[in-house]
Image (cartoon, rainbow, N blue to C red; front, side, top):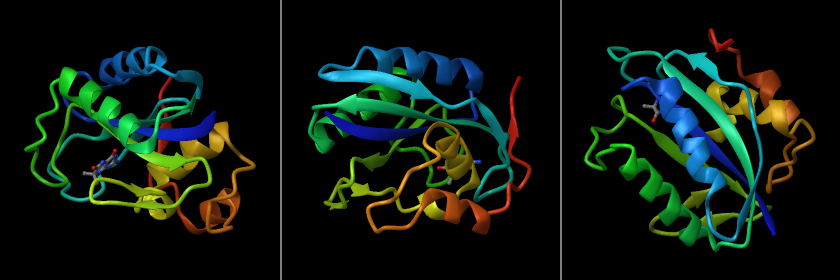
Length: 160
Ligand SMILES: CC1(C)Nc2nc(N)[nH]c(=O)c2N=C1O
């Protein structure tokens, strides 16, 4: 089984419920075991500010699905929850599921870049990820805990 981490984000149509529904779908993925999920966080939008704050979390799965098969499943869940792939770039969305890490693999295909390119500088990814994997070392050798020291919380706050 490969240990992988999924970033969850939503800022439309009752984002907390969107994340809870997405977690239920992740629990049902084939050839996979749901391991854990961070707390839910409120975060300021990265990119255009004329959109609602986001709700973010990071989940851990153990899977035998190949990376692109896992990506297919994540995109299916997004679409099931109303995400239109034509969403404007960096615009608001009902649900984002990003494959952040797939074991220790570094992947660069047409469809998939892993580790996720935004991981090292996004507080709404780093802090929830650290919640559930404080000892994590990235494929390039950097320690997650060291990346955290470089990225301010920028108003990131746990939701009750
Ligand atoms: C539009 C962009 C870059 N901004 C975000 N900003 C925040 N705070 N959280 C997100 O999940 C998120 N996702 C995005 O795709």
